[in-house]
Image (cartoon, rainbow, N blue to C red; front, side, top):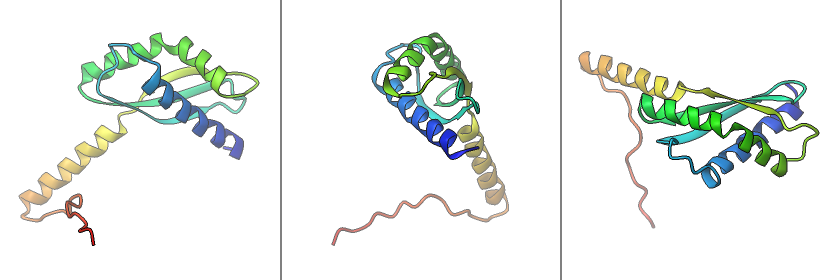
Length: 130
């Protein structure tokens, strides 16, 4: 991947995230929706946006359908926000990596608990103000 495509990937990810937050008011969008990454083709005409939806499977399905319905709107808005020769055609892909990582962590914790071990968890200490 070139530096240019990396920059375009980051820019499209940021702008799509902003658009989802500010402009998409579809009631089918449920849960916490995050654009985790974007991959554009070398000619910058196609973009695959990976979407993570924290919620139920129904939330994920309805959110993906809503994004598919809003695809032309999002592409048009993207074209006004970023200056490229061609605005890439968008394709949304469900990204379940965060859920899979959480399942793996839970499995490791259960296995460690069965062995009588403890795994370090997230820090819960709070810094004291001086």
